[in-house]
Image (cartoon, rainbow over all chains, first blue to last red; front, side, top):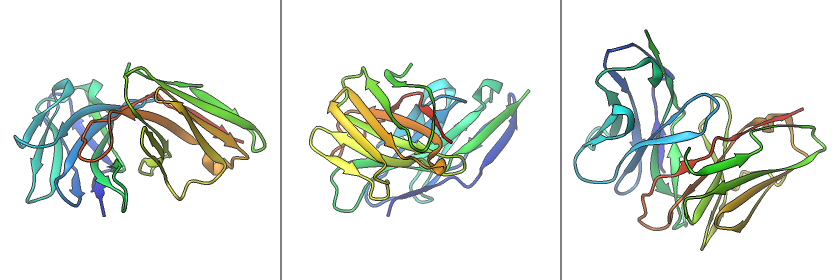
Length: 117
Length: 116
């Protein structure tokens, strides 16, 4: 069965400090991994994805994520946090329901990131 | 803007009302999705439409009825809802969700539904 775990409900970091939002996954076959961000009263916005290739993936707004196959992790990172990065972050893995050829995304519960000035 | 629009943005309805949520995508995608987002819960996939297949989550109550008249429009018809159905309903679209496709989904802003 496919699943995603985001072990932290909340992450707090000071502006200018590096940030990490954690994600671990479980999936059959090759993992296709995604990060999305949700600002208040908005839908989810795509940040980045890992399909294959370099384990360090760069995305929008200066975010990057590191794929680690042995640890089944895909942590989101940013070298220097901004107050405007405060939002809800979702990790997702693509998988298939049993008997279906239609891929779907399995989302984590989300991590609320707060960057304080 | 992501190219996916949803109307209305906010909806308050009684349990005996009938209403519909509308989603439109301007991205040329061939798959559309309805999600339910409740506080402190993972996103729940409700329905998926693509050119070839409709996938329905078996746990979705029949008081939710989707309609996809073409690849650009998606509706969610609501009737006799319960207060626990209050949530943010998100529409998304993507290109070709079948087989080995790994295209990301693009989300609309959502409809905030309150059932009294």
